[in-house]
Image 1 (spheres, rainbow, N blue to C red):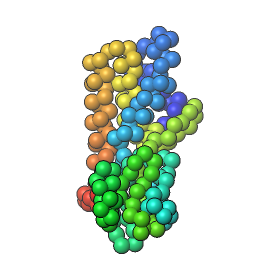
Image 2: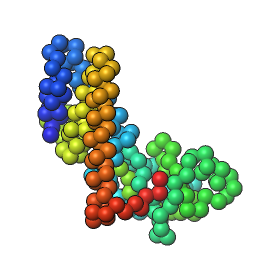
Image 3: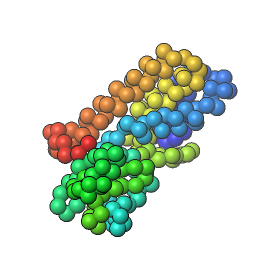
Length: 194
């Protein structure tokens, strides 16, 4: 679905024609997209970047559309995620080993590692009139219902907002289960280090 089709669906679900509510639709859609970028990471949004060169201090910039790391690996194998605080503690001891962490838009690994591969989930990109993204193409219902929830908040209809958000979360969780189950050819095979 295009941006315009998503907006029309949000408008249709709201059954409101007052100018303030209609004018808030783009804001509600953006708030919904931002909220989904914090928890909705289906396999369709995954991207593999090989041979990222790290700086001598073990840092490298993450891709602009980075949402969440799935796997960080070297030629020796997968690395383990640790919190930034734990990584700082390990760095002070000189023992970061096969661990990595993320702070802001920076990936941190051991100083001795010169290249890593990163499998990550992309954030849903900001789109405009007539455009599409992986979110609007593959999961429009999740975005629509999250947007409807934001519109209900704008109208101060808290009960309907909670119901719409719950439905969006349910749709998103179903999509995540289905897409992750397909990772191993139909059987659930977890290889992440979260």
